[in-house]
Length: 258
Ligand code: HEM
Image (cartoon, rainbow, N blue to C red; front, side):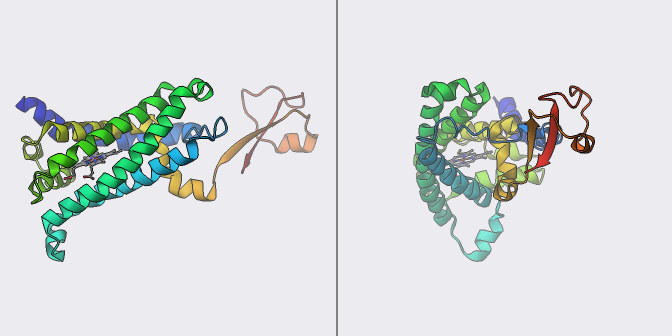
């Protein structure tokens, strides 16, 4: 049991973070055409707008709250005079509301994905699986709230902050810091790390580029014309080794920036 704890909270975080970093760089380098949300809005707008807004608002608040709450050095809160108990209550209240909003949105999106035949047909296993994993993680997160309520002095929260910060400062004894916490917390931590592990292989990668690319739409669009191109345009068009001979119908490919 101690060995499992050592692996899950002392070694697994590094496996997940390494796969997250390397996997994302390799996918971006080799598979840029797959680096997208895989939007299904064209197939059915109903349920998407409300579900997507609720889900994204909730998840962004949770994401920001987790980053700020877990990774801000404890001395910063002490220097600002923020009592640990107050921070615990803020995490439970703000995280709880955002969690419920996110869960409502996630369930709408999951219902649409599983029960609309057109969307179901166009979804990969990964599309549905990652949504189910996120919903499970939300349920586990929400289930930690009554447990945190039993530690309103913030003592339990300090363990998680020290653990999370210890991962990034390569503290050798981090696994021991969370050895005695409730199994629901442990399950939440392990599933959270697993989400980081699978991140580069899912549509979640759009998180990394959304703020930059989606706002000013820097993308490529592959345009094929069925017309034979005039000779001058054929010469200017890029040559693809596996493309059919130029000049025939449906044979001319031009790649243009949008
Ligand atoms: C590596 C990833 C993650 C870690 C290490 C982590 C860690 C934690 C911890 C320690 C708490 C308890 C905070 C406290 O009250 O003391 C918590 C709560 C919570 N987590 Fe996570 N979490 C992760 C990912 C996620 C994800 C991906 C979601 C949602 C999609 C999520 C949703 C929640 C919710 C709703 C709560 C309860 C409200 C709150 O305290 O903020 N967590 N998480």
